[in-house]
Length: 294
Image: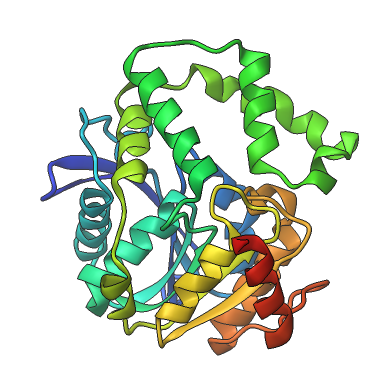
């Protein structure tokens, strides 16, 4: 289905599950809507939720409007989609760029959020991610092509944790799909890369958020380093932090069962238990933060 919004874009969306179920909106990363539909929609609808998925501006079959994009604009798209579908205050789950969009929505349109889970949110990227973002913007703007296998291997190295990278039975099925993204480009790829690079909310803006949030970090995430995810949760009085161990940024692929369990706990109770294999004692967190920041 498609809807044309007051933000001058037509978005593609789908709705699954019972009409009277509590609404959950899944906010994807770039090119990630299909991952949500494969990994999470079946579990959510089975639990009785009415699930809304959509493709971001610039991602087919949504409209590929010309850049520039900003996270603020993508947040306005999400708010307009909520209003067009008459969803009202509801629950959101966002991954990567989608989590950035939810943080923007929490800052600017909190009345639309009942609660939200932010998975792998790169709100304050480290030096490595800044370099990756800058290279991506330059390459896309100049039309530089990278050999498909090299691009696929590069993406795997920064998306997955070391344990997954060393498991042939895990990594082999994804190499072809990741390599296929090497040919992605156009307005959406440039727009999202620029939007991610420019998104730098201040600590004061973030600290003013008062909607219930679950911030999910991953132990080996270099796109959204875990100590910065913890910092985000610590800044927001209504946020809770949890962490998925032995996992890189692409948690929906690497640890789908664990992600689904966290989401199920959060939707059911507004809280999460200790993820399998995770350490969440305050002394552990303090020591890890000191190590990562040194």
